[in-house]
Image (cartoon, rainbow, N blue to C red; front, top):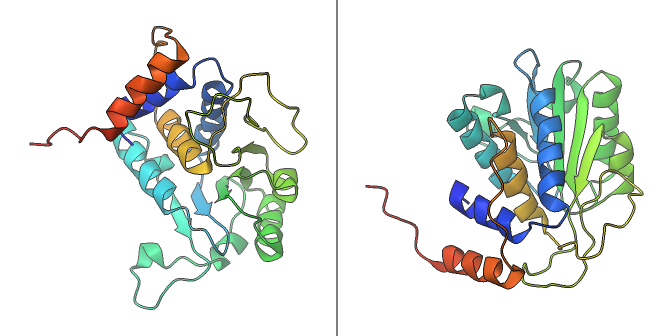
Length: 225
């Protein structure tokens, strides 16, 4: 998802809590991996590897001049023969400590084994962040957390679950828009690479914003050369 599409998505979500919530969480991520930090570790659950977020953060690191945003993907199972940067196993979490940041991303329950490793990393001084489906045990371990809503079409205008910061969050204001974890990752990664907060786009009716986003997302990308 390029910058234009992210901007249009934010326009559709204007008036909900999501734009502010994703920028807040991205701010926590960015500040925790400041240049003096020890690196960013990115891990999912046994059934979910956050490949796309790893790629987006790597791109943002290059485009924004913030190499500290480029993550190390930690994998539950690395196939034999995989290159070194794709062969980092869960043992890396045991070595995580002060100055490092551990970002856990999963739509499902993380599982007892991963939670134990996350607990050890936090106890050893690592900063723990969670971008997930709202697991209470994971949020209890995280220094900051943001949970997606159950997957729902962007065009659904009913009140949704809205963003949750940590376990036991209060329901959002009426009119909040459901947002799935994949879309949430796009917004967070884009916000993490921003050098400044863009000026707000002119307000339009929700249907107008939705129609414009649909046109942009279904049109072919412009030629690169």
